[in-house]
Image 1 (cartoon, one colour):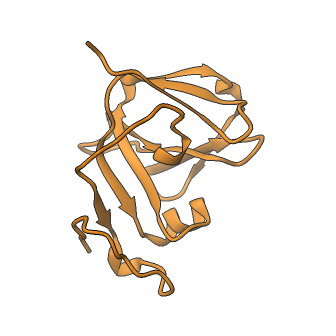
Image 2 (cartoon, helix red, strand yellow):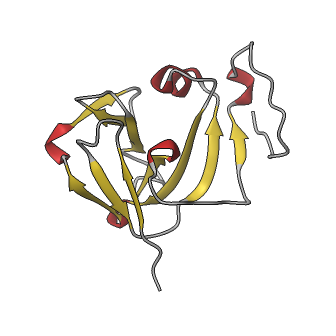
Length: 133
C-alpha cells in the first residue's frame, strides 16, 4: 500500500499530493532557508519528483533560483514556501517539500539539524536530533 499525503499553501491556491513518505527529514539552518521561511530554520522532507503531483494551482507557483543549482518554489498569491530542488547532481531526481505545508498527519522518528554552523544566533537547539555542520 502506498502512502499518500496532501499539502497546500497558506491561501489554498496550490494543492499537492505526494505518493510516498518524505525521507531525509531535516531542519536546515542555512541563511537561505532561514530567510525563505522567515524562521530559525526550515523543515524539509524529500520525495522523488515523480511522487509529487500538483492537484491545483500549478500556474500559481513562482520559482526563484537561489544558487546555481538550487530552485526554490513558492505560492505567488500568499508567498508560502513549498518546495526546493537541485537541477543537477546526485539528488536531481528528488524534490524537497516544506513540511509545514503538509495537511496530512505525518510523523518521523528520524530527523536531523543541518547547516547548524549558520544557525540564527538567537536560537538554541534543544531537541535530541543529530546535528551536522
